[in-house]
Image (cartoon, rainbow, N blue to C red; front, side, top):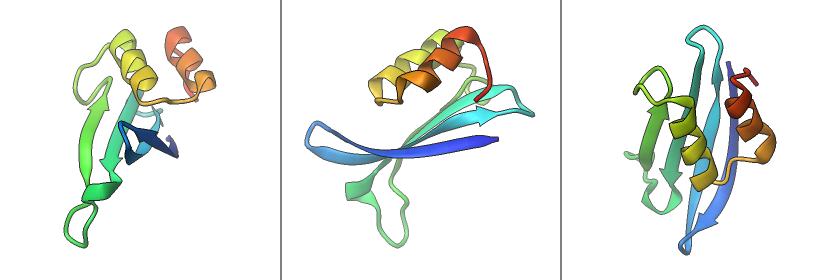
Length: 84
């Protein structure tokens, strides 16, 4: 499984975006954490989507990748249905 993270600013808030490809499940995934909501008891998870886990198509995952500023080289893999 690959898992990458990046920190982005969107609407004056900071988010940590985790994304990747799970080979055994053949699944693209995306998790978004609102860093302003992270506490000792709460990790701030606001979005948890996957092409297998939640039944999103590759085009729906691509839309999420675009919305959450996943780098182009990973978006291209989704378009071509390739693992990364």
